[in-house]
Amino acid sequence: MNIEWARALLGGVLIGSACALLLMTHGRIAGISNVMGGLLQPRQVGDTSWRVGFLGALVLGGALFVRIWPERFSTLGMPRWPVLIIAGLLVGVGTRLGNGCTSGHGVCGMGRGSPRSLAATLTFMVAGILAVLVTRHAL
Image (cartoon, rainbow, N blue to C red; front, side, top):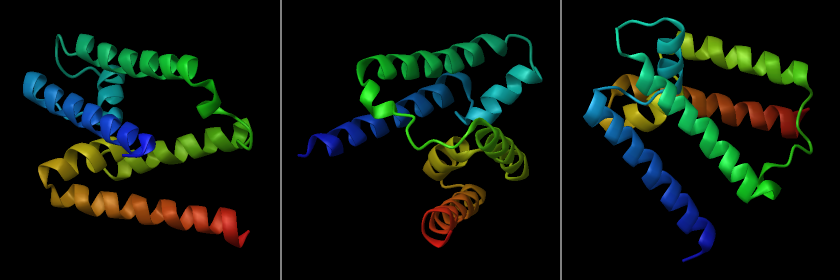
């Protein structure tokens, strides 16, 4: 098996396992917008620690991989900061309109067979494909 396929498979297994573990232990869906939103607007007492741990693990995991494979995280060809900020804000608006983000709908919702998540995933995949086609090939 090609090493890239093995890494992708391992990554998928880890993400799926983490999502299943969070659902089984806390009854929560591992959608990043929901996890972060719960920190910004606490809904329940005692609901903060797992959210901080979850987001902290994402940051620490990213930092670890940058340290291990820095060549995989090149910033060459990246857009300037204003473009990134506008893009981030648009993603935030999209997650509010779609009642969730790519991880919540695409990973967890699809795994649960949610029709709403299927529609959301198809929408953001088509929008992403069209955005790449326009920005990389038409402009």
